[in-house]
Amino acid sequence: MRLLPILLLATGCAAAPTTADLVLLDGRVVTVDPALGDAEAIAMGGGRILAVGSTDEVRAFIDADTEVIELDGKLAIPGFIEGHGHFAGIGSYKLNLELMETRSWQEILAMVEAAVADAEPGDWILGRGWHQEKWDRAPADSVEGFPTHASLSAISPDNPVLLRHASGHASFVNAKAMQLAGIDAATAPPHGGEILHDAAGQPTGLLRETAQALVGRVRAEAEVRTPTEERAHLVRLFELAQAECLSKGITSFQDAGSSFEVVDTLREFAEAGELDLRMWVMLRGSNEQLAERMDDYRMVGFADDHLTVRAVKVSMDGALGARGAWLLEPYSDLPTSTGLNLVPPAEVERTAELCNEHGFQLCIHAIGDRANREVLDIYAATHDAAVDRRWRIEHAQHLNPAEVPRFAALDVIASMQGVHCTSDGPFVPARLGDQRSEEGAYVWRKLLDAGVVVTNGTDAPVEDVSPIASYYATVSRMLPDGTRFYPDQRLGRMEALETYTIRCAFAAFEDELKGSLTPGKLADVVVLDTDILACPEEDIPGTQVLYTIVGGEVRYRSGDGQP
Image: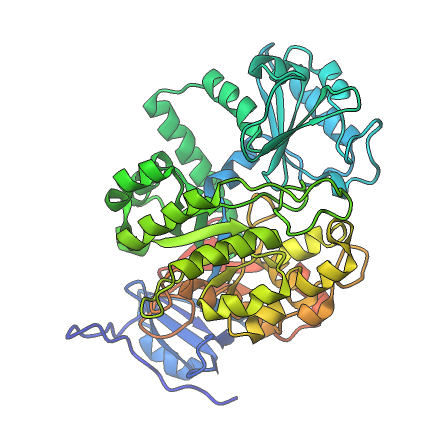
């Protein structure tokens, strides 16, 4: 192996540190910097990377106060950047019924029944993570594969129940929740939403997309907190999410849509020195709110590069699993529907104008091929090749083949999630048919080959926040039954690592700061017990995080959970 010369941090006229706070020795250090290649060791000091090189070279940075970690051949790479997730949502998921691993409606009913037994009458029972396509059998009397509320209402007659779909784009509620929300057979859904009905015309309890707000408002009114209580609640969510992310090797998190109020608390959390990973946040609000407040909320590198707010999130459509993705042609398994548009394109155009005027990135959720086309049309109408905007489409899951070159021509970033492919793959052909699935579903390879910047993530809590799981999906496209979902769209292992590091950094205007182990950049590193770049493919899913390092400080150690 060719060893690298030591490269020191240069910070203007200030002298670079000559001793390190932390060094990693005798490992495989993959820098994800083509000019540097691989090394054996890395030195960190003052929150930055001081040097990469051979173990003998890096030993020169050690003094009595330096922490030394012997890697014993283990893999050190840039810290994973979660390219699209919901930070507070991860914490919220952990405080309620965790339904991601359930495999039947009966299993969910049992969990709700146990929660009701511990609750007071009138208390809300909340949960998230179920997915009807992942159950081992369809519920009795199902409609479109979804259960009807009778069985849920029977076990919880006095407690309203709200169970969010894994995607977050649908919810299932019982009779008590519908009663409180005033939902009956005559209730009209809001724009971008649907209330599913049975053959007799009665609501089944399934609320699609924006119709969830009918119950969500009632639940929020029942859970009014004082400002102090609300801040304490949010801080608790942040603490839970942060611990989960650090344990999975995530050093930076791109949050896909938070309110002004959540950002207020996140800023206080960062200012108090309690934010141990780095946050890059998309604001979510009405155009009126954005016009009035977005300048006041723009911040870059706040709290020693721990908090940046410079983007806006909008949702053009829903999700494929709940049949809310907006399609050019009807669903193969529901010919009466082409999905749902959540925000009218004219409103999205106004958001684009605001982002141009105020220097914000625009990040638009688009899953269906119609939604992606509409977003690209809006981006084309406002495109200026002379301005480096780095606007994004979040998910870009199903594309008409004609849109792939448009991503490249318009410099649009495809903010994708590898694990969505293998999680959704078993039901995608039923939704889209074989031809549409092959031509346009999760086409990472086509996009990358066209010159598009493709990033990675998990959309947690839609999926587990594990980068290892999403990395494995990206390089294997392996489905639970052992088959591969159109494997010609796989990425190579280094390409996949780039989607989780330097490409995510680029998508946030942070590639000069992070994403590779280049001297001078932030000392954000993860150490793994398995070389995911070289091991047998089947060994990747079992890979464990040994250390998560943020700013040269060990924030997670395997074995004790915290440093």
